[in-house]
Image (cartoon, rainbow, N blue to C red; front, side, top):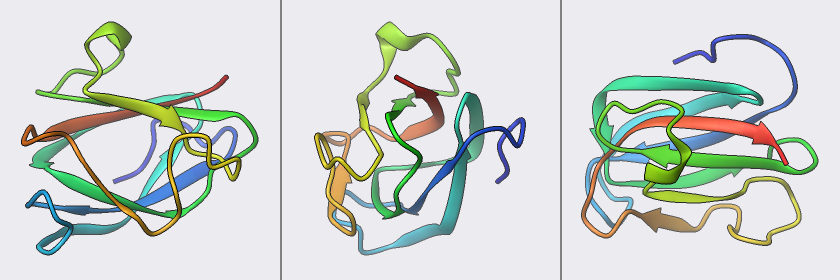
Length: 106
């Protein structure tokens, strides 16, 4: 899973098919800054394994929606400020499955 362009800094996540980060879907998913990408298989939870660049902000979408920010099922800073997420902690979408991630500099 690669971003649409190689500009900016990527944040990296591991994705899971259950809501408790037990059943791996894909490890080492890179989401580059200022990109959006979709997956053929959705995921119900994730862990951030590598922080993005300063003020990097991410949005998760379902189903197969890229770029319609008001419909995001989760969003927050994915930089090292830990405003919204903690490295290595499991996050889910209240039972929904994400199919796309976008990332922007805030």
